[in-house]
Length: 166
Image 1: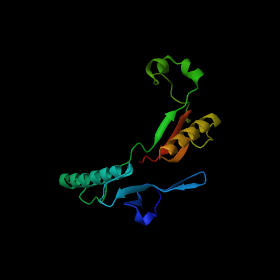
Image 2 (image 1 turned 60 degrees about the horizontal axis):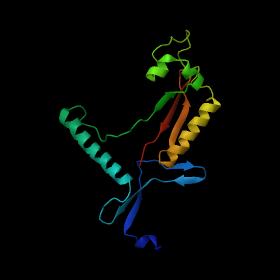
Image 3 (image 1 turned 90 degrees about the vertical axis):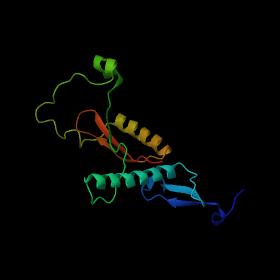
Image 4 (image 1 turned 180 degrees about the vertical axis):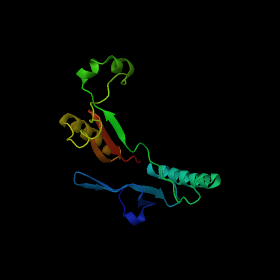
């Protein structure tokens, strides 16, 4: 049955290490959920406790090795930027290296003076934008909001920056 929040046998607390985010018209605030005895009853608390342990032992290691005796914290991030190429199925089928190895083995250098940012600031192609929006929606379903999605320097290269969390 339902009961008032203050009578529950557990606590919820805002996880300030994961930023809140808006999807549509809803504000999502990442939280942890633990019992009065400190037992976790969610999937996020074990991750937070693991991060605390990594921080404590990494600081200890840095001090013992003398690499950084003044470090105050060690932060863990997983896969902050995901860069990828989008290739049409027709072009993919024309490339034996992609078909056989799943990666590029042959190519040429870019034309002179076009190595830098010609594609970086251009608009994201509509089909690629649709792809990234679909990925973003699926990632929101599992609690990983996206901070950035844009073109990268090379033609057909794009980037997304999800925030991995539990």
